[in-house]
Image 1 (tube, rainbow, N blue to C red):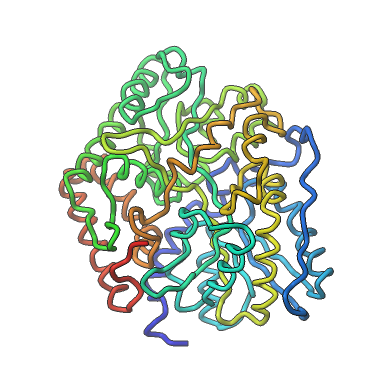
Image 2 (cartoon, rainbow, N blue to C red; image 1 turned 45 degrees about the vertical axis):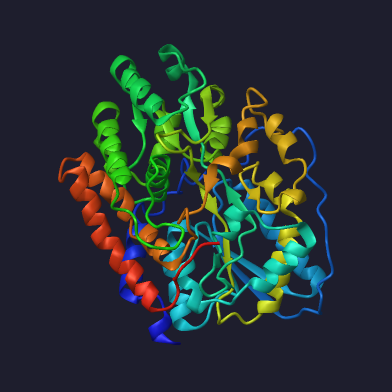
Length: 473
């Protein structure tokens, strides 16, 4: 192993230690049962799926390591499905599922040992692994030939323009809408929920004062807070880097976003947002203790099973508009990686192409949680969202997600998800910046300056290694 080119182990362990906060709680969801199998049965049959013969004979074994999906019905379907594919092509497939928060440390341990799984699925960009994984340009090229161009959102979450390598393959993603309780927002004149960050502040404050229910925008060391902070920055015209991968965090726009978050906290939230794990906001929304959160649809799927009345009261909004933009990060970004130590990389790549050809089946069995990087493979997605086959009340509750690609972007926007952005994400610099100012520990200006002092050396480190450069598309 080339130690000079590997992700700095000390920094990595710091990052993954933080990422594991929340223990075994299911991220972005309501607990270990998220989206359980007792929800309403689908109103129509699943897509039939397709099979394409591999381009060359396959043999041996293929071991897959992946997260435990936030909609468990997906895993119930996936495991026998991939094993059936393996049987058909002559490969013995095994699948191991672990909590998403454990994936970074497990991946790094296998990389350090030079042995482990052939194929690993992460749910956020993992550019920091680039020196330790195979370039998947051949998979992307073949998928593009079969299905059209990959969505730019996914391409920018898996491709390093400096090295010209795909450090991962990103065939699917998940939108990150706002989730709100209609019964709480109707009395303040917004039955369709907030459309701007100013709406969120004004009406969220009124709901807290009149109804005793706070907002749920986290500032903790967990994935949802990471996403929420970036959405706020982008909507104010701020970002961590520019399109050329230069650090631009210390700007008037960032200071304004931090000032806004501090006011949002003071007027409409309580201190719990500083210590949340990744399940807290969903649990609070379902319990009626939060009026609005930023999250996916998976916890609502759970609530369909556990509390149908509450599920009927949960609705969704697009990205909130700020002074400059209305933009949110993808909630989940699939990053399939094939480590350098993989014993059967050809089988791993052929499976990824098989998976891509069946993204309609994937979307269906995730209960419309997973969205395709190749939309032509899922031609019925819009119809499903407009008339939810899994029993949404009303049936068109998810229709707004058909345009989610228009207001969703990648970690690292307006640049790509590079190695430096990956480390900033993993070490929670952004939610910490917001939290320090909101708690009154430092001024917004100082919080931003301190974040810049953390971020700049990270970028310098990766630039020295030749893994970021001028960037851009």
